[in-house]
Image: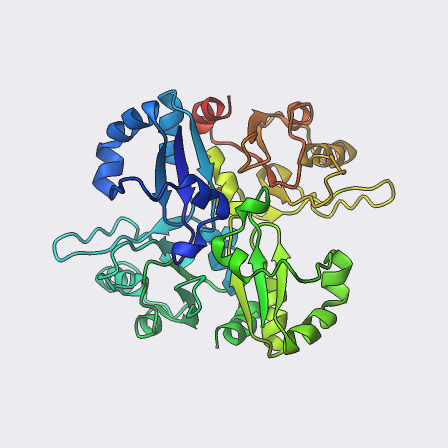
Length: 212
Length: 212
């Protein structure tokens, strides 16, 4: 059996009781990075044919890998947890803002911009940073793309909402333009962050009250 | 301090470890039904000024009540959990399908239809039944509204996706028209259900594989 266990948003105690009971702390822990999941999933599949394998995922397990397991005839079970839904704590509902996209961390040599679309200001940007040492923020990457493509897209002063460390005791919710958000305390530490654009005017007061 | 603790989708073990540590099982448990939350919230506010109050919510705590607490100057904290995001286990993403609405349980004398909108087939219908004895399904209510308003809205054969007991071991995912879903085993038991319409053609095969 292959278990997909959602770890939730912030720390070790965000796992559910059900997930904790399934998780076997005595077993060998393998870091499943992007390469492992995308290119070496067969090893995982092979092992789960003969014994229980727990696949731990920050947030809520995604469906793509589950479908691969099912197609391979392997029994699997998903233990759900909080994920992108938690950003609605700012008072805005995700379905109003179009597609949810991931902003990956940039390195000196790897700076993909595919997430950047013409309607950035209607896109919800969410990522799950895994490496604590990389303190780059969603706002910084979005802003860098924005400046780079400014000749093709008009500069606007639309208000965005930035969230950092959602679910943690030091959770932060801030409003402002992308420029303003870059200078905010929105550094991510193994947490969920989001930039939710095109904010509805009548919700502004509520949000600023909650985030202050 | 007022804590809003998400209980997750299915049973007692879907609470997070963090939520469980905050929850005090020795204390008096008050059933907070709709009347209590909407009309008697002041009592809750008053008590949380002098002692810790834990407000337990099936799924993930909603923001409306949090904002009321903040406006009243009361410290509060949200412990997130799985909620509507879990329906994406069927392979479809919520943001593709417009507004998320709640379908309430009908009684003999109370049969609200406000959730029924012209674009029902693009609406995601989600509810959290609380009373185990009410085994009415999302599909039945949606179908009843649909038939009633058939003279105003053309009958179509668009495919929907129905989910029942999401997150439980006996989770069910089925595809079909609303008529077909009514006859499926989609009875809800304190779980999340959804009807996701206008399914994308290229996902049909994956979904039918996963749900079989």
